[in-house]
Figure 1 (cartoon, rainbow, N blue to C red):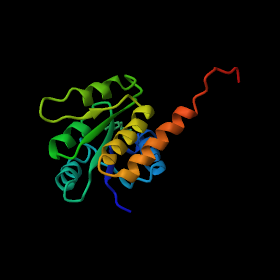
Figure 2: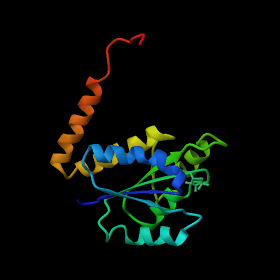
Figure 3: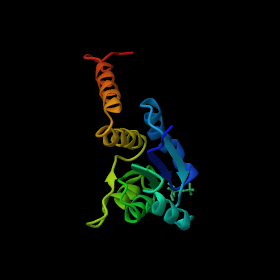
Figure 4: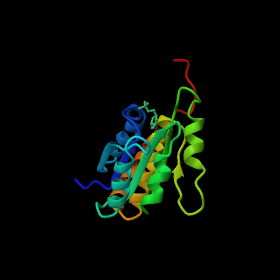
Length: 161
Ligand code: RP5
């Protein structure tokens, strides 16, 4: 299977959050790779990943990190492949630190920043799917069906159960 999406994260401890993005890609039949690439602990790995992203055929990168979350922004500065940032929730500051670290990029190197935590990771998967669906009609239909199914699953009235 083709792997157009790269899911990268700063630490193994980010995987419980980032696998929500992977789960969406699995549901939609989109190929991906998942790698630990830390801006601080493995900067050479970050450099290599960014330098080779285009030539390896990556179309979207989903990058999650927590705390001093420099990975998404640094990756955006190394490659023109669109980067979707996921602020991982932290214990000390609840992920607001991660959010601000990812969101406030200087002009020229954008990161499409999602919500904090697992909802943000799932939405990153859906955002990647939407980008890929621009040039893939089969995926576009699958994404439309996924969205319709979610809408249909929402009851009109609340229940006590
Ligand atoms: C960041 O530091 C990672 O993205 C992670 O969210 C956070 C904590 O990492 P660990 O100390 O759990 O490895 O670089």
